[in-house]
Length: 227
Image 1 (cartoon, rainbow, N blue to C red):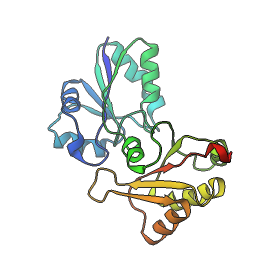
Image 2 (image 1 turned 180 degrees about the vertical axis):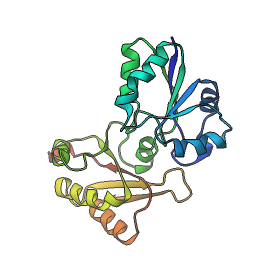
Image 3 (image 1 turned 120 degrees about the vertical axis):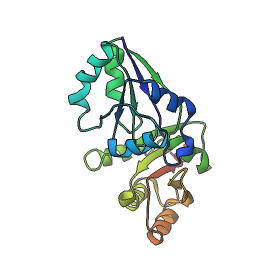
């Protein structure tokens, strides 16, 4: 029986790659990557020469049985995403579930993920929070907002640059213009930035400053006495 490793990769700064992650990738028989074009640059930077196979949201169902068969036959396989920890708004969950069902040993290395730095930087409550990842693009989006209206924990969302203003405007519709928010982008990179203020102030800011990079939104939870 082989073993499945989930290996986090840097969310921007290559200096965040851990020694253990490099060591693990150098030792496995095969690496599954969300985007081989992105991952090959990372592997070359750390002089990692291992077979690389694409494994992403569009082919993971089709490739699942093949990967499990390799694990059962003795392969050691690592999964990496474009950035961060596999399985967190990235491919990996289905493979982990199937590996466990087939009694394959699974190990997840600790490492980068955008949501924790954004939360800590936000200045909002870190004691309890709910991570929603990327919202549904269309169907189910309104329902998701409705379900979060009375949420008292800090709410964390991921968003792309071309949708950030749309999402901030929708948040106002459900949470009010004065709800506190923190918006982080380009975490760990040269142009890292965190905006803190109200939702209406965030819209004003990003209307004047062209949104670039991947965004993490941390929204203050509802106040219990206002529910």
